[in-house]
Length: 248
Ligand SMILES: C[S@@+](CC[C@H](N)C(=O)[O-])C[C@H]1O[C@@H](n2cnc3c(N)ncnc32)[C@H](O)[C@@H]1O
Image 1 (cartoon, rainbow, N blue to C red):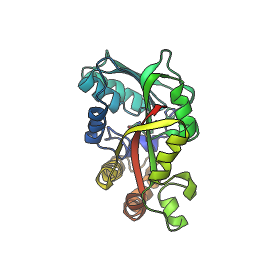
Image 2: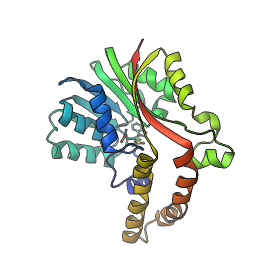
Image 3: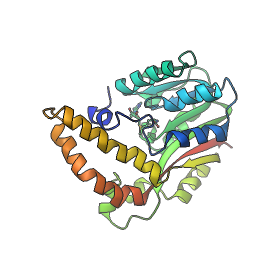
Image 4: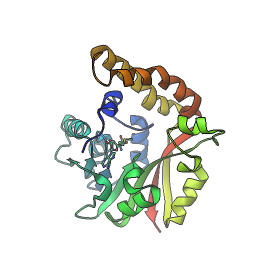
């Protein structure tokens, strides 16, 4: 049980594995301003940047769960680097059924709602760990512009248009799930570039170092096609944001 190696190659330099910058993550933290001692659970936490920086900046405590052994190792090292290893911990495992032993104040799944089978299932999953008046953070893509054709849909890594909603539809969906949307921070085209364009240099450097690797041909094709795909489709048509929800 692990994340395919291609992910850790293309995102080897990333601290945030989503179209969000460290600055946007900090803005979200400032917007919520969690009191010292706030307990968090972050499902599919990646390399743990949200937990580690919020532990440093807001003195939260918490647990992250991720399926990638590489990312969990990086998260643990980051916690030590930031001097917060006594506040946060990271577990390797499948988060799709993970429920906190004790209710938490903030339960999150940022950019991995497939672990709950979609937004509705992920809200249900997070609810199982949440204290009364707790907050859920969901990171999710939405259509920024209506995709005109199937090529655009597939260029945005979707198979059909209804895989994502528009931003108003997504906000409506949260309401239909019985949630108040109490905050949000959205990605923009520059933060998409920090996520996607930063992968190109990672891939190129890796290819130069590992020309004979079994993944080299696949990564070479990705580098040859990825930049045009990004600027033609994803950067134009796909939005992304972190939405903060509270049960009504
Ligand atoms: C798009 S990244 C987001 C990571 C992190 N939330 C962030 O914003 O930096 C998706 C993450 O989901 C993790 N993942 C995928 N399936 C998972 C599962 N079933 N259980 C736990 N983690 C999973 C991947 O290893 C990866 O770290």
